[in-house]
Each structure stands twice: as C-alpha cells, then as structure tokens.
Image (cartoon, rainbow, N blue to C red; front, side, top):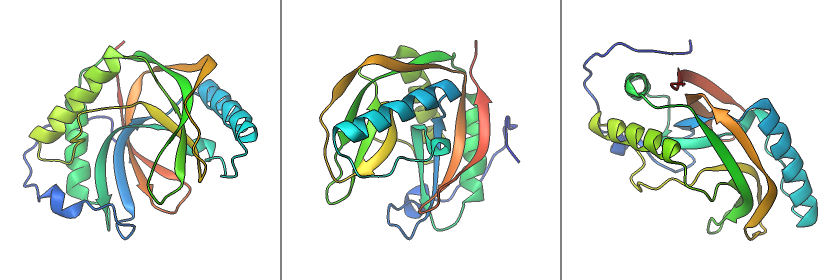
Length: 205
C-alpha cells in the first residue's frame, strides 16, 4: 500500500537513535527523496556514459530505476520499523511546500574513505524552494522524535555509479532539469537492486 495521506494520531515512539546504525547488518534503509523525470533519467545516463568513458571509470552504472536524490535519511534498521514508517508518513502529510525546478549542473566524486567514490550529478546553485521543503521536513521530523539530518546542510546530488577513481568537479554545458512535483518515502535494502515506494506526497503548484 502506498500512503498519500495520514490522519494525525498520537504514538508512543521508541528511541530512534538506538535503532539507527550504518553497519551493513542494518540492511533496511529509509529516506525521503525525489525521483527524476523520464527525460532527466535519459539525459543523466547519457552524461554518465560520456564521463565514464572520458575518465576511464570501471564502476557499473546504477540501474535507472534507482536514480534519486535524498532529501532526508531516516535511518538504517535490521527490519523495517512500522512505527517509524507510520510517524514519517504523518510528518509528510503536514508538509506544505511548492513544486520547484531542480537543476543539476555538474559532475563530481564524493569521497568516502576506504570505500568506492560516489560519482554524482550535483547542483551548484541555491534553490530556496528546495531548502524550504528540506528545513520544514527536517524540523517536523525532529519535533516528532524521528531520525533527521543533523547536519542541517543539503547538497542536492544523484549518484550515477561508484568507482575507486576520484573525479574533480566539472560543469555541464547543459544542466539536467526537471520539475519536482512530489516527494517520496522510499525503502532501500542494502545489496538489492530495487527500491520500494512506501509513500508519496504532492507539492503545491
């Protein structure tokens, strides 16, 4: 069942900090995010293939159905936590933010020590509408006692592949753009090649 709305109910939360763990044993990851449009997916794959050849990257391209941008991570768990999912859906239903254009205008590697580097499409420009949505969701998650992004900083990016080689930032002649009209609650299981859509919530026009 995909949730699109939730009534406001009280709930007895357990401490999310004790459940979340980045260890691979905690295979079930939850996050709010966006998916690109079909046209943006096609453009992103072309860019990935071009950069892969130009920089001799040997990592495999991510399946197109996994391409996404993370808005707020909600932790990693041994098994799916129904109470956290329930609470996250409640929070999402209270969000009031407008749709906006997202523009990814550069490629680069995100460094991870002792791990393959994430080769990504990212955005170098400030997006007030995106940040408003991010802050509203982050603050609401905090108030509900749910896991939230403690950094308070969002770098919009979409991972195209993982590779041992680090590639410096390069601007795109033609940025990848699309109109973000909804945000999603997604379940990702470590080691699998699929995402499960748990909920979706439209943004205001």
